[in-house]
Length: 227
Image 1 (cartoon, rainbow, N blue to C red):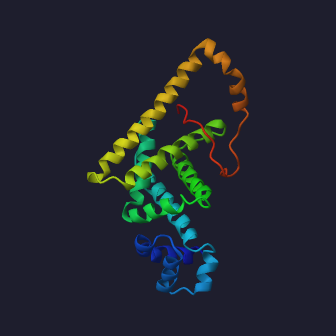
Image 2: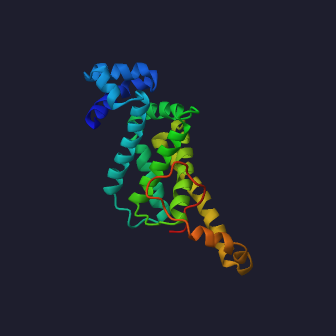
C-alpha cells in the first residue's frame, strides 16, 4: 500500500496545480498510474486528502535528509532552527502550488485539526532532528511555538516573489527573534527573586508534565526554552 500511495502521489502532483487536492485529480492520478480505482481507494480511503497528507510527510522526510547532510555544529541554536525551517520549505519548492492548494485544503473546518497535526509533526521532526531530548513541559512548548513560526513562514513564502525568497528568510529571522525576546523576558523574570516567588506554584505543576508516548492531538501553547 505504501508503494501504491507513492505512485499515486507522484501522479497527482501535476493535476493538483489545476484541480487542487480534489476527487477529479485523484481519479486522474489513479488512471495515469495504472492503478485500479478500488485498489487506489484501499490505499487512500479519503482519496486526495490522504495524498495531501502523504505529500506533507514526504516533505518532512526530505527535510530530515537535507539536515542530515548539513554541518550545523558551528551555528547558534536559533540559527539551526532557522536552517531547518528553510530546509523544509526548500524541500517543497518544486511543488509550491501543491503546498498552496494544501494550505487551502487544510484550512477547511473539517480538516483544520488534521492540518494542525501535520504542522505539529513538522515541528516535532525539526526538534528531533536537531537533537532535542526534552521530556517535560518544554517538549510541548518548543513544538507549539515552532508550529506557529513555521505556519506563518509558510504563508509568507507562498506569497513571496523576492529573488531566492530572500524576503521569506528575513521574515523567518524576525519571527525567531520575537520568540527569543520572549525567552529573554522570562529569564529576567526568573532572575527576579520577588517575581520568581509568584511563579513557584505554576512552575511546580509544570515540572510534573512529561512528554506523551505519541504525538498529541492538540498542540499546547508555550515557548522554546533556552537550549
